[in-house]
Image (tube, rainbow, N blue to C red; front, side, top):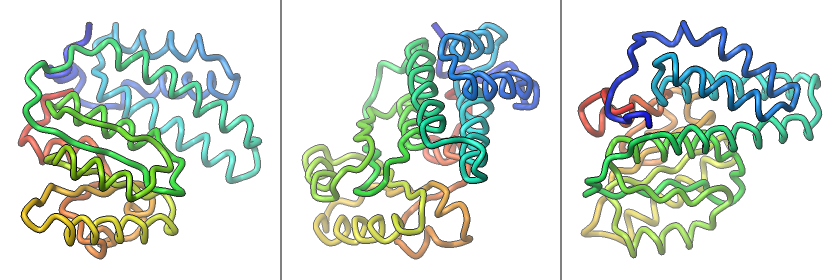
Length: 229
């Protein structure tokens, strides 16, 4: 098992570059078994799960997205790469020794129209690794359903991502309703995703409490430490 509260023995993601490049090639080849072998080899070399998420999965999927946008990949190939990474990510996550004392709670959800769930899933995993009992609601979740679960669980943290600019307004509306409906209860609301990462200060316009391009650093700021992954 891989401890989630011990930092990687590598202080930089640069040593992962060759693994990341090989991982991208396996995605392009549609080779799920080899993709998993590469990530487990990284674990054996002493890289932490946080490193693999940010140094292998994230840049590889960015590259797949770039190739698709440039017309160099079909939508089927892009979906296959995403599905492989979802599978491998789950396999890596299963190796973690998660904290047993989970006093705080979190909810992460992609609202209606947002089908890009790997980034938010990684953020939810980071929260769990850092000691939050985290519910990840997945893609395309209606706002009413998210608010009902928030009302039931009263989580300490709520994460609402937006990949496209069209998804920003639903996030703003959800936060507005959250603030209005729960006057005596105020969770920390965190936003993220490509839309918020692209425009400086956009996260402030939706009345969020926290944002960072690096999801791991958001978690660092929540717990006051970077030694959880």
